[in-house]
Image 1 (cartoon, rainbow, N blue to C red):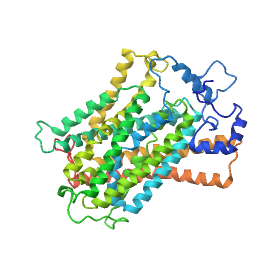
Image 2 (cartoon, rainbow, N blue to C red):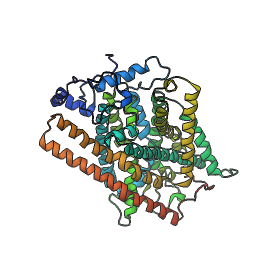
Image 3 (tube, helix red, strand yellow):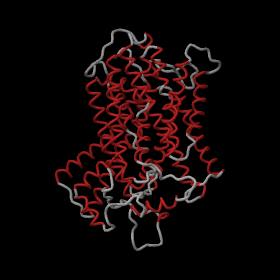
Image 4 (cartoon, rainbow, N blue to C red):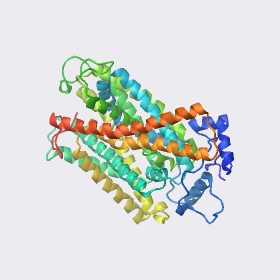
Length: 511
């Protein structure tokens, strides 16, 4: 077996696998990853398309992955090529993004102290549920995306695959639409004093859509990770500059608000339930990105190393989100806060800091488009030469699928043309499943199989873990019900207050 390939640290015997979990090294590896990770038993049987002629023995996860790697040897396009460092770059590009600039807006309604506490709590929950998802994927290396995972998780039912697929595609397309919206917002911000012929916002949205389509054409995550590294670096510069400018500017621009600069350590009595829930959903949306993680793991050469990427990104997230969000809120205050917070800066400062966000405005939408395209492409061309070779059919289909997703994203950007409410809608509808419910269910499915295999756990630890995962599922249900109500009501309130333009509006949406 190749040293570069994934080797389970346990023998094929299931009893030996489960007793191995008592070692100290494997306990640490279950949190931080590495060669001592112990892979538990499968939840679902091996799919028919992966079965070999050897029907007397079930293949281990290691052997399945070795077959996948061997199948790509010598191919023109290889997918399982990412190291944990390259995967970390993908995570950084996904999380260190424009949504950071909604944190000051969230703190405005939650209060600074509860807002910072919620930021850390949500980050910890997402880290925990992401580790559960990783362990689930290790048991089933054939999983290529969250749709495969959904079907495997819910007893192999076809309705689970279709339901997950619909949410998966809608979520990713909404995110693409968000980036079309903000891309047009950036161009409008930079050209607000210029006279633009025609319907300026729609025209800018079309331009951004075309640029993003071109940017999403690379076929492998290895290439996307290089672009993601640059994207995350530029985003970090952008948000740090915004925080510095908020501190040094003489005052926020008059068009952003009026009155004294005042911030609240705790929620103001005037904050409504809808506003508070929307603020909480905004924070949650920024952290919850598990929908793409199975796709990232599916292109790692050694999936055991994934937690290293996860921990590096989570630590960076907490620091950047808390510092940038807290500083900007304290220096801008309640009366001048906008979403994204670039609109709370004076014109020159706004244009400088916002401009560093350009790579992320393009790349992150491209990343989600690529994940969606993989979902369709790998199913259309499974076991076909078009999957790994440079063929006209392969590249034409790849480009065509991407184009369809970007056209849909453009339409979404014109129908829901406001930043914070779009984040809230996406968070309540999709993060309820992909951020909470899926992973609570995954924990109980894995725990059930481990008990059947005779794996022992400390009774107190087991009870606390059960309680935690029940709460995680209930949190997802709250997002789906109460969160969706608050998001929809927030949109209605925004339209009634005249705070947003209508659909396919030609008016500038610049900050």
